Amino acid sequence: METTAKLFKNGSSQAVRLPKECRFKGDEVVVKRFGDMVILVPKRYSYRGLMAQLRDMGPIRLGRRAQPRRRDKRDF
Image 1 (spheres, helix red, strand yellow):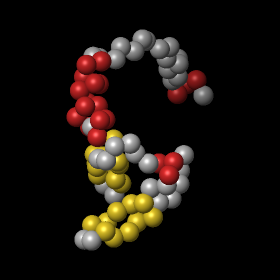
Image 2 (image 1 turned 180 degrees about the horizontal axis):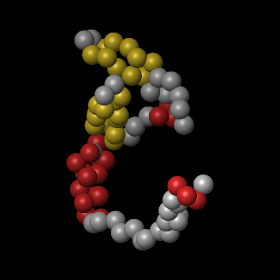
Image 3 (image 1 turned 60 degrees about the vertical axis):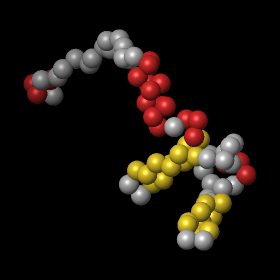
């Protein structure tokens, strides 16, 4: 889903008015900045918590996949 939200000033802070379908439960979010993008995540899913869950999963084991036959220049 993609939609547009309005920005406004609240005192000396900038705020975002989220559409109803994008509202968060609770009263706090974690704010992460990646370049000029800002990501809001419910506090219960903090970045540290996510990384801890990924670590607990352990390494991901991928099976071998069939590789296409390597072509020499002579094959053309």
